[in-house]
Length: 263
Image (cartoon, rainbow, N blue to C red; front, side):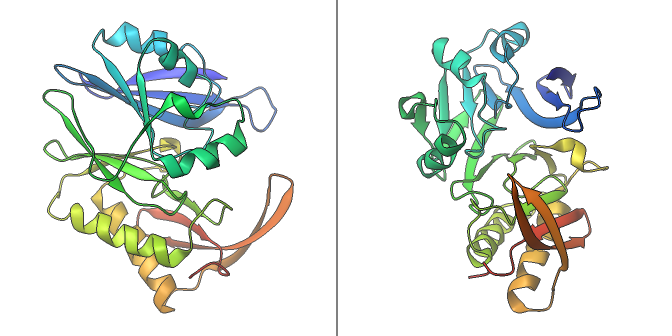
């Protein structure tokens, strides 16, 4: 595990955890968390997987109160450092329905660690306000956090990172995700300078923008109305062979879905 910190602006930092999945001694960028610092509070969006010492690194950048906002309950976004923030008295916000997803991946987590998060919750940091927008699909309780005035969207895996996994067992049927992403796109209408900061930023060769949300909606609509049929793929997922389809369009390089779970 290797942790790197990138300063994106005077108030926004990216924490990247690398991993050596190939086993060749060359860790590659894997998963990201983001620290947004306001005038009164700070928010950490997600908290990586195996990285420890994240709380200490955050404290080097700000002494303001910090809330942890979880995009969804997968282990690579609510990992080892979560307990550090709990011990320090910070609150971790997550949609309750994703706790069952998380506890299957890491039974050591405790329900009392988490403060319930719901659609519409707003976190006022002073100079920044983060709106919670529910968009279940990748997991039942997936959300994004929108800073409307400054046009920043922190999305975790909710709409992927250039590659989007809707074929995994925790995913909702495509019809439900399509309805959710339509609503998300409508709420982002008019934000022409929107920048998207996803959970695995290295997966895209370009900075994702509001166009990425439109591309995601376009594919979901096409899959559901039959105008888009993806290419057949197969992968080994947690020791099991998984067959699925993929679609590429615009900034979306690899939209993966299960054709047997459309509705």
